[in-house]
Image (cartoon, rainbow, N blue to C red; front, side):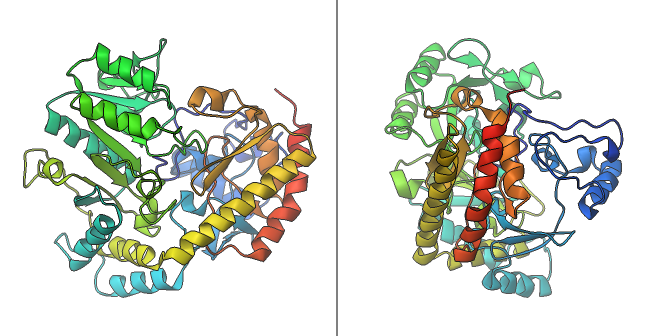
Length: 466
């Protein structure tokens, strides 16, 4: 799902920094310069006193790459500026939402106008209807939409609705696909090809995970075996329409179509998690690329304009089971918040074909620059894409599932990351996350990236397996 700056609970820590109670104890072996006297370091130490780990979402702590996380002061276009005044070309884009770039005038104007009339009403607004209509217009299989506040809330609600609609309890997900921190979805596979999920976080009980079946991504045979072993008991299959939380891993040809067939033949619903891909990889998300219709969809990120908003929707007969029309309960005090709705609607309306053309060009340019720099240093790599999302795997072999992603030389990534960060480029601080471009990127942005990449590639080549 690629949820809200995910600190993926399935991701192994590959280069974490050591701490013994104070920030001064941080040691860095990944190439991060000495920034202990920086304002970011001071804020990180201060944050750690009142916020667990010093961050509000785990990946932000830089545990996977080492070093001191940068605290951001402001952003504009493709540029992030930290509290020490350093500028970075942003290749995270708030983990996906900022397809237009930061502080886009149309979005800022919409937010200011909405905020001036009130921040929250706890009552319906016309803007909610307009945003729902925009989503329905773009994604043909989505007939009705319910607005929520986060991708996690969207997937949690979609799974509950699928269980309520089918009267079944079990759900099937894929190893390495992240759908937010829902208890039942914080599970990974045990031994065997198609096994019941095992909790991957303390606080998630075996009882909460035992109705979750986890199989390898891109493996239709495993899905078929799971249905055969659990005849009449699987309520839904939930999948990232294209995976972005084990790195960018697109569905193999025929995979999503196969899921559509298997779920339909077995009386289960197909939930397409498009929180990450939705309205980013095309105006209609991944559905606009492969045309495979799910029964339910989850959306977030781009449709939020960068504010806390998400949605789930799908077939009208399924959505009719939601309260107050039906018996499946779901509610949210701030759902459809007028300011968040205004940001999302402005972002979608500004995302015309020219924006999507720019995303395609910028993704292709970045992919070429990455591959050329790593090839020049003879670093084994694959720059994989899922639409306009991409990621770097330090592997000579294609990556089609989570086991293959983990088998890559992830120990090269911290040095590569810091080689870029220290020269004004901000990639994701994890080897298991997708990279994002914005339509705001221009020749100057790519010049900065092109200048930084040779240094980063040399650092990756020189990295030593721990």
